[in-house]
Length: 113
Ligand SMILES: [Zn+2]
Image (cartoon, rainbow, N blue to C red; front, top):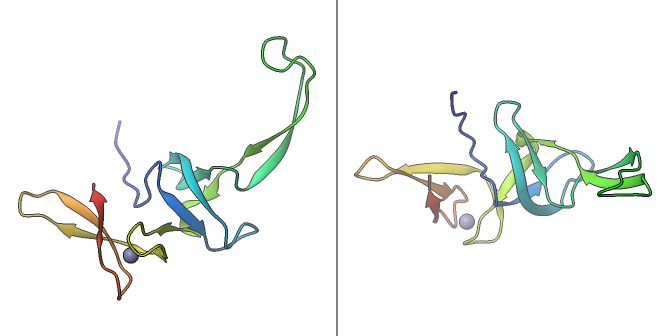
């Protein structure tokens, strides 16, 4: 199995920059790196009709759940400056990489990759 790398990681705080949820932000719950899509907590909700399930949901009916958003439609919220930013990388001497904020007035390290 090949690991596809994404600039956005699970647990990141991101802002949606296009589509119907543009301007909203939330936490990344899941990433499908191969399809370049991710799921954000309480964003891009779809109403899903379910059949009754005796264990989880005896009534059945309509539930809301998150549907995936294209990774290119979101930007990382930088923990240092609190602004949506593109992600850059900085190489450390030992070969490790650090994600950095690419805003000109910030440029802080975000975390180790
Ligand atoms: Zn920043």
